[in-house]
Length: 151
Image (cartoon, rainbow, N blue to C red):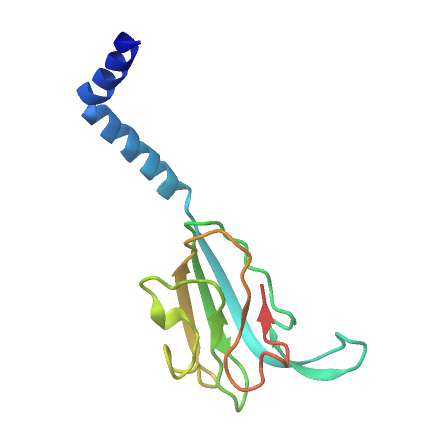
């Protein structure tokens, strides 16, 4: 027994460079798999029939709920939001995204970012730091209940 344990510890103790190299290769492989997910969103009013009644909704690229963003842990998400509403500001809040190092992308208008004024655009950029299913929605007035939301 003693010989086996001594052999194990001598392998680990004798090759710290090997262990360091293996760790670096593992870390670089994880970084190499990360990608950037780009989205372009136009926020506008559209008539919809989501509950079989025609009504005016706030949409993303003409849809409500908005498009699903598919990303994995480590990916960078870049969403360019253009506000085509004539009289309302827009801000998008990302539930569950911790915004480590990117607090201005949290979407709480008046707290972490200025609103996106009519005719203006804003680029949200953040890293997905943990796996999960997350929701996004408007953080201005009643836009969330008017259709400006998604997963």
